[in-house]
Image (cartoon, rainbow, N blue to C red; front, side):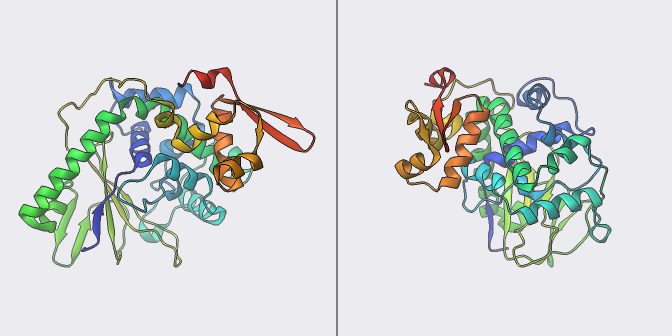
Length: 318
């Protein structure tokens, strides 16, 4: 319990909004919640929709990489999703569909869209999930991010104040009615069953759903992820913020992608960009794929080389 810490994860904020797709979720009528549902439908984010509307009780952990620091960048998180170990991805999808009676996880039947995407291989599947998450972030979270981030900061500050006055046990017990701290550990009233002995615990405020979500790695092995609790953040001064002014390109697409895009007034290859920006070719390739799917790049083949150049639409980002 001494290693309990708060983490800020832009990707967890986005996926928290996806719980609004679940049949049991209440209908959001205005604000960011409406944008989440509309974005999934209008942009045809079929894999994200499949994850959060199925009958299973477990959502694969790879779509929410664990933060390595107090505040993670969206760019690093999306890269982790796109480059997840294929064996881990396959194992987590298997648990989602088949369930695990031993720990109380129920499975369900996979929709055709998910199965068709899996047929193309784990690597392609992971990249497509990362691309859909990026689209969701741009459409439904980014316009509200300053206000949502302020609410997250305020929640963490108030929880820290509670811990200072009432102790860590008092702070943990106040996270949610289904969280209870006892002498022998932390007890969570959730559907899954089991006992976890962990060296650390991560706490993440959620700003969309009002329920408690637990991230517990169901896969055996030495590389098991740390448990995480996603709890509803305390209401902020403005629980239904309006859209913020349009952000600069670096905030919209990430600093690294903004640099690459700015360097593509002249057509360049992946290898050339990797050398110019001191990045691995695989990293550059991933960023180019995101930019191309967003309609910000065109690519042409010249012999054995593929060249990328930014489009007119890219210039509108400023």
